[in-house]
Image (cartoon, rainbow, N blue to C red; front, top):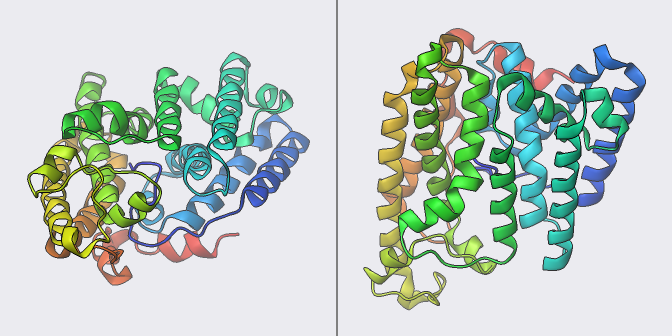
Length: 338
């Protein structure tokens, strides 16, 4: 599970908007030409390429899922990655970002109205959205969850500060991360039908933890974009106001204390998510546990240091220690596969 933004500690390998558009169009053409039976694996392989390019930690953790679930995780990732790139990375004006997101949202609604993957592709729906619609249908994911995600991406275009952690979670993190955890929880499956609510609760805890780790790692970068995800009451406790700049030497120490405090809060969310692990289907637990441990390790590094301007990362050898040794053989295959 994870939010749309990369939280493994390494800088994403950014694709340009033109590269995204060309890659998606080529994938959709191949899927349409292949026919209904072959369209799904073509889109899934393309989604794997997106995930492999943007995240090491989540990509590694997801290798320990059964193939069918792994394909669906990769499609979910690609479906949230593009809107996040629109909101964050592509060199667009605020109006252009908004227009791109509205077009993507309209395509999602078109997909929901279609009868299957091929019909969605023929209607011009981007291939990852078309495949995601099939996941929504197969796993009973409430369609409004993805709408909430897109609302969070819209808020990134014209950001505002958040008064408290509750304000941040309710009005941003819910859409940017919690509902993504819900997508995954529905797809991972519960240990038993009556445990689904427990699995969703654990997904919520993990989604919030992942997003808070992302925030504390990228305080300076977010501030340059005009965003502030540290709650104002946390900053006021350090004598800082909403206009404070973490790059200002007089504010730096206060920001670093606030970062360490918020990383401590994130740690509590990871702990609660770990306690809920048994709510998930047994064949999903290794991947979820690996996710908790990899990103928990990153969060602990940030909490121990909290230095502004240093983008913390988890060394690859430490990530490997978080993964199930009996399944190490899957890792080289994942990177060698075309």
